Length: 307
Length: 145
Image (tube, rainbow over all chains, first blue to last red; front, side, top):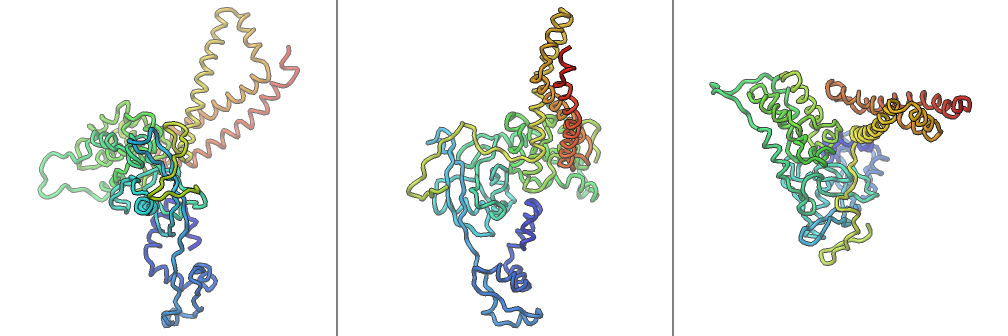
């Protein structure tokens, strides 16, 4: 377990969710561990399993002897950048101490602040499982989904800084006005445009579908667009998210309006504004290779769409 | 850090530095290479401005040109030239990296590795250039006559 915790942030995110999400699997792992491991892992409970030679023997042990892992809570300091347009002239940093558990996420910390300490804290969240894309925010200087950022991935000896995403108008606390972002999205015509009526459905080979598979994963959370240094200074730039969603249809073999979208993006504020800083690729909670997608759209403009 | 807020007592607001201040975005190699590229690019632009002016002076008066060139031959300018060459080398090498990242899918995937290769090449070139150049700048025989 200790080893898996050393893995890098991105790849480990999914594994850990799986690992910590299943208490039964954790208990199994603990039984299999050596006495020393078990003792260190469960120091809080004060009990340790007697060593056994076989799995059958382990299963036959009395239930009372089985170690019960008592989750240990610890204090995490969150510094949240608050802004109330009716009171504040400018945003201010506010500290909160929250009791957190290993398996929890930044979103849980924000909930705990809102529900137990300060109900005036405003932030967006909906599904809380990394699908709706509502809770993108800047956590310790990087855009992340609060519901996918595990507390244990952060250095909790230092405070964790949470603030709204950058480059969109700040409305309140962690909430920004997403309209400019969705305007860019609408502008690239994010819908299938195909003429003619097929008998049953529009056929596509597995390879043709694979071509744009990566960019279908977008959840429009704006983490990429608001991580882009070009977008911060030039709000007119379409931004990575709009280009990713254009890519999804430009390279779709069923779509007939690729050229229209390429013309829209071949604009002063289009793909050529991209300076390949790769912040967007790092920020994407779905692991989309955003900068690669933008580079492919650039290439499609120069040499035509290669499906 | 120490103070904890409750629903009854809100903590005092902390003094704010500027209106737009927040934490610095913690980008990776790509972002910092872009920052370096911008800084070196602007610096080289201002050098070129001066360079065009002092070179065009030769059309006005060769004596004035010689006088200006002579004023450049001092250690401060010599060290400035190290910075200038460093900026040009960095901008050139990173420029090649950006071209590769845009046109070659392999480079797009391995941009991080390419950044460190660029840094290595820049360091190697500067390790070659700097000692040779500084010997010229500080050698007494070269400077005077």
